[in-house]
Length: 574
Image 1: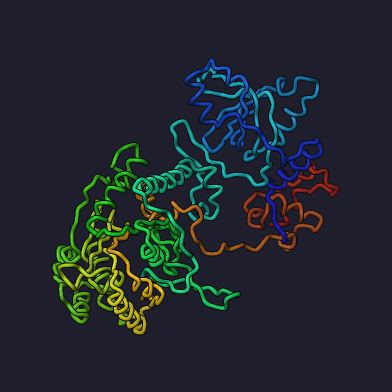
Image 2: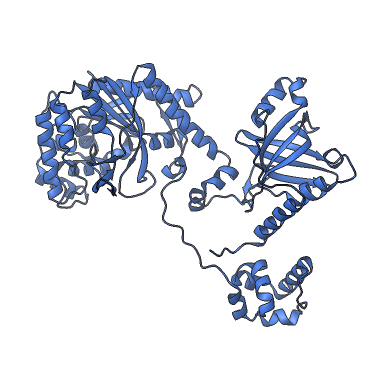
């Protein structure tokens, strides 16, 4: 496959070959021993500058800046923990007559983005910056593509930022290198999961794994991804939820199980939805949804304090969210009445459609009562719940896996946790009556026959498991991606996923020598003009005098065996 290389990329490949010609392997196989991380040097040297440990230090990382000042130079090296300033002195790097390692390798053949290992001693400059005085360095990996150069002035203003969202998400590896704070977001995501896991483990609950490929996509109302198992010759679905398998484990005798799971839903994408997402689901025997509400708010308070320096208050945009337990509680019916003025309790499907019409909410014939109520709540109520709030007691039509409310048979014992206008967690007193569960599944089948492609399948094996008996149980699922958004002050789910789903990258047609020849560039010059300017458009942007100077400079530098261009020759290209 042909690949057009920019002038910088060509120069880096030339540097690669020059390194090899000097006997330096740009991609060595041997381990490079590290004595410290950069952060350890900064903190340790500050606390004990006289310690002998700082006399012989070995570091490695990516070269981020070079400031060459003749026989001495400074550079910045970046590892996962931060940056370290380096000081190079030609005569110490090259104590003998041969100065090639400094004059050629360091000054000319090392580029921004290369990985190097350095050994030396730590000192503090006159400006007070902790610095490694390099006694020797090793090339560890040659970078063949230039990094975006993000500059910051003395006031902290950033210029030439690598900020285009599509480029950042598509090339997350570059985003992580050049944009401060991105690595910290993902480090905090890991801390959130670790704090949650510690909370569950301290209570004796068992972390488990359940199938991703499932014969029945159960546990939620969503459109699945479908695949085919060749050996078994059967269709399979990427799971939309892990609920029904975790409940099977409660049937099997475990009294508390949880899973951090990748789930998949073949639905729309926006700032809060990605087709592949992470959810934590937990099920605890002999509990109900009132217990789960207290458990959820205690768990979230613990998690927020763990990742937020002990505070329960987090900043999200211009808002402050307080995760201090207890959280506000309100029933769904009361929430709808409060924000729309309509009391929908006991309404049939026709009456609900009339309410939607009066509230200017779009509907379609496939929607049953549950979907209509969900639309009303989603459009008219959700945005009002900024601080953590439990929305309780959902209509039965919206909750086919949930236990009937102990006081009102039209409702279920379910809550959702709303924060910043979005659902973060969903929980039930789980339905463990196998006969009632079969009826609910059959009602979902009727919705599917009406055209609702998100209605649940009937899972006969799960019904069989319930018939063996499941103890009273409460379960809760929480979206890890959305929770991470809240706790890292991000408004887009793509900011907390390393590699969010994206449309295929559009590859522009590669420029060729013929493009330049069609413009009038002689055949003997077309390949060289392509190498210097890349595209005809960039050539046209330059003035003929600039092109004349650059191309003849390139001819001299590359020692090309072509006749020098005259300015009149170049002017004819225009």
